[in-house]
Length: 304
Length: 325
Image: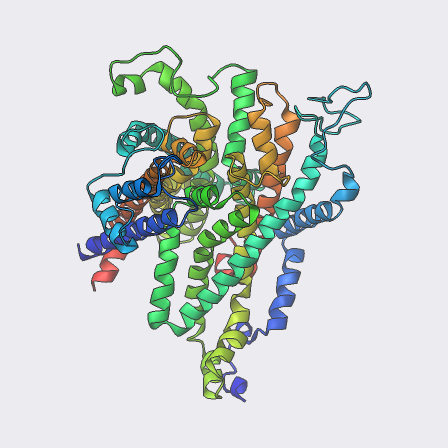
């Protein structure tokens, strides 16, 4: 009956979790930018899934020509779509298999950032007081660390593994989403429908997760989409600097390889341009999708 | 004034937190920090003596306060590999990093502000539909990759710029200032600056564009329109001035942020700055030097955050007046 007590509540307040999820899924269909972003994501996901079919050979295999010579620095052509590296590796194969590690890094960082940021933002914003103060000071601290230097120092000393890079990225990125979600929760908890739920005797946690959380879910998606791009760029930068996981094929590793093997002075554009373009595409897709969610769910920005 | 003190304290505390995190991070690293001093020929007693000499036998909290005390005096220890005071090494390369950052930011912001205002004016045209995704793409590109492409095109292929370093071999200068004002230095600076500026212009451009769009709907702009001022005058005199405020603050923040991002650009162009120093120090496990370089970057970041806070107060009177009442 509590719902009936406030007939003037805008539709927004009565969002159920299912309704929000439906809108989150449907959003890209209405926004051309977000749709483009989604298409890019789906394409890369397909490439990652079918990498073994698209490029059957082991990307790190050293290839030889028919005459038995090392197939080094072969120009792009029918046999090797993007040519080969100075060690005779198929660049197209590396690019295709690199999609896997890029998506793995991006998605795992995004999931951690979204979960930690959302939970911290919810708890800090809803309970306020000391909890809020402590959580926000920790967020301030994480934000005052220089981003890339911190990742380098951490992976440089803890060991060059992909999971350490994801850990470092997640450690530094959650405060952004936590802050924004917190401020959103601050306004939400004063809404009449939350008050109504409180009056009917709903527990604190029920109010937080059933009545408030669905409304900030789109924000979690915004920051997850941004985190995918950041994590991929960071992984590429760290690999480029030589602190990456040398056992896995990634776009960053390809760029590092190309740079240190003088591909630049030989003008082997087919070696170092495609990985960069792939990174740009994935990151831009994240920008587009987050922009779409902002415009649909945060109407203040609509119409710009 | 109270607000200034408050912001100062806030940023100083953040810096203290960073130094604390750094201290414990380096202490918890695998291996002893003295790996470079203790060699295998020393017996247990001699190793202990070395530990005592460096104060490493003391409890952790005591070491922490000694470390803070040393920091306050600018004592950052000796580099393991260069065997020179860390501070001296840092101060040698710091100007290179600052010049690179500032020149790039000034170019990026000058361009970004003008182009952003222009794009806001072109709202709804095909130019906007092409330009906004293009600008987003420059923001999405890894900085080092932009550098690699420019290096291949403009240095190796066209031969217009040197491929790395800060000065040609065999150049000698009587002092640092003369070196930095020389044609040779600027020639080496050009490509790294172009790379950074290309990466950095997106933020001010998009910020300026959206601010302009917002400001153009405000009452004082409508008022100016009603007064019959020309559209150009409204854009420049009324809208742009107000839209500029957040961009100025972003500039100050940008100095601190891009100091961290410089790490990759300095590496691509072998630019002898603090970011490249950090990368080299970490890769040879030179703990004191890595720690010092990291702290220096964090210090610049904290100082610039404080400057941004101050600018924000000065430029937007609502902030300081709102708090006073």
